[in-house]
Image (cartoon, rainbow, N blue to C red):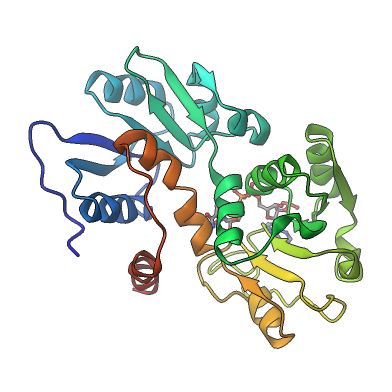
Length: 284
Ligand SMILES: NC(=O)c1ccc[n+]([C@@H]2O[C@H](COP(=O)([O-])OP(=O)(O)OC[C@H]3O[C@@H](n4cnc5c(N)ncnc54)[C@H](OP(=O)(O)O)[C@@H]3O)[C@@H](O)[C@H]2O)c1
């Protein structure tokens, strides 16, 4: 399928605002969905320098854009500019999706947490079956913790810098702080383990992250939100133990659905064809 939409005078527009933005896969996936659904729309990269965010957003609104995704370094500015912060944005403390309403208001969402949960469900994993241990206490961890807690799932957080895990527990009720040095020993208490740190990421702090899953209970789901590479050291260790695994690519795809639905009016599907397209692009 061609990823290039046909443009007309009525083309609906959205894009991703970041600096740099060239690495973003969002144009690839949104334009795939636009082509699949025969929608007269386009989704473009919007390289916006730090300090230029508000000017850019006002310009996009004036030019009739439907909205935008927001990535580094503009997430805080996106939070500040919003007229309506949806619950997901308030709970996660961040914004990655802006919707420009017809009356000029800017609506803001964070879609990472629900994208994470939707991806688990797509893999047949019932998040409600037991407590989840999150490794990491950064932005992604907060969004995921909020979505799990909203579904009544108890969450424990282990982070290298303990104070950051404690700060997260102070922001969201229901989080237990686990010592970073003890997380491998604590595994019997959990139904799922999720890596939200950048450990294992290609070019990240430690490509050779070598966790021990010796104490993981049978059937424990092991998830990594790192998606380059898709098969991370944590997932490889889980496979070796015969545990079910979920990689990070599906979260990236599912978190994009809300924006597409709001801007273009169709709820898109994450399927094998889309995953293969992204897989090939990430490998290339
Ligand atoms: N699949 C998806 O859709 C998706 C979405 C969002 C993010 N991600 C990925 O998730 C990862 C985290 O993103 P983020 O936005 O949450 O980043 P962040 O806010 O910068 O947080 C980074 C986390 O990694 C930890 N960390 C970094 N280096 C470490 C090391 N050497 N040892 C132990 N812990 C270390 C940090 O611990 P300290 O607090 O101790 O520094 C912190 O908890 C990135 O790889 C990102 O690409 C994926």
